[in-house]
Structure formats: structure tokens, C-alpha cells
Image 1: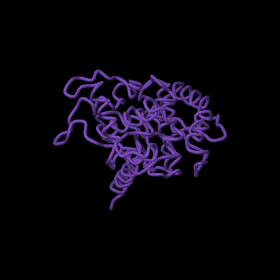
Image 2 (image 1 turned 120 degrees about the vertical axis):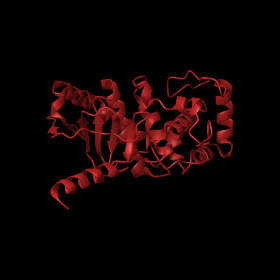
Image 3 (image 1 turned 90 degrees about the vertical axis):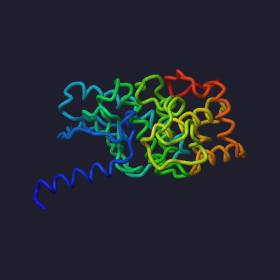
Image 4 (image 1 turned 45 degrees about the vertical axis):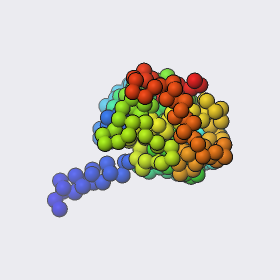
Length: 275
């Protein structure tokens, strides 16, 4: 194998490993333009930052903004996950020139690549929370898998609740599940009694996001309770919380009443609850 082929092989392998992502709707992967990263001079107890120097002053400004809130967000997530401390600290926030979202290599990987052109600066904080939450999931277990639809749903609802109103429309997932039908699939399919082994399908993610927000803001369980009740399916999480097996039936009845099937939902956010 010549040098060029070896380089290409390394790039393919790197992309294949980067499977845990918060990706823009319609995308299957997050691409971060390659750059020689520059360490940011500031850091905190649990976070260090590197920035693509091509971003110039904007990159440094994003790094400064993330460092202002990262410790309080870490403390909030740590509380939600029962006080655990993830392994492989500190977190390394890598601010890239990407525009598709954020990624990290494995559920426990603490090097978080954040695409600076994915949305407004407050959305960068939301992306950090979502990927950081997945690291907590990887260390916590209880059925929360950051590469599956239930774990991806949890990462999104926590980020959206902690930094509300900053998510660009093409990162919002529930309207996809409510309004569209997957090719060869079922409209408003049940992704509560089953879990999809991917974090990029907006149909299963949208269902998961709505259900988790329903548990939190309609049934009024706390995030700490919901996370502690984790199971391989969201139906199992619901049963651990309530003792009942009718989670999807009760949830979908309310959803269908509020957003009649076959009619445009008009929903533009992740969380319509309480309704």
C-alpha cells in the first residue's frame, strides 16, 4: 500500500469510528474540516479547549463563552446522573470549522468536536451539553446507549432543557416523527417499545425526544428520576417509573389528540408539553 492509500485508509477508519453524533437533519455524519488545532490559553477544572485557528477571533470568542458555562453545566449533569464522575477527564472541547453538528469517538470519549458553524454561539453550548451527556450515559449505563435512539433522545432533551430556544430548525426532530412517513415504514411508528441502534434516524429520535419530554413535563418526573429508571427501551424506563406497561399507548393517544395524524403538526420545537 502506497503512502496516499495509507493516508486515505486512516481517514476512512477515523470517520468510521466517529459514530456518536448530534447531526443536522438530513445528514448521516458530522464532518469536521481538518486543521492544526491551537490550544486555548484558558481552561477550567474539568475542561480544556482547542480551536481551529482558521476561525480567527470568532473561534476564541466561542471558546471563552463555552468556558463561562461549562462547569455549571457539568455540575447540573452530574446531579442528574446521581453524582457520578466520568472517567477520562478532563473534557477536551475541540472547536472546529464544521457546520453539521458535534461528535465524539465513543460513548465514553471525552474529546468533543463542536462545529462552530452549526448555529448561533449559544447552540455551541447546547452541543457541548448533548455530547457531554452522552459521556455520562456511557459511564452510567442503565440501558442508556448514546449510539441508540433512546440515548440520543436523552442527550437532546437535556441540552434543549438546559439551553432552551437556541436549536436551529434543522436540528429539531419531533416534527419528522409526527409529520413524515419513512420509506417503507410506518407513520408515527413505536420507538418506545423498541430501540433503534442508531443516533441519526430522525424518526426514532423524534419519537424518543417527545416521549422523554412527556415523561418530564407532562407526567412531571424529574430528570434524575427518569435517568435512574433507565432501561434498554423507553417503555422499560416508563415501567420502572410507573409500574405500567402502557407507555406508548397513553403517550400516543395524547399526541394524536393534540396533533391529529395526517395533518401538519406545525410543531417547531422539541417540547410541546404540557398539553
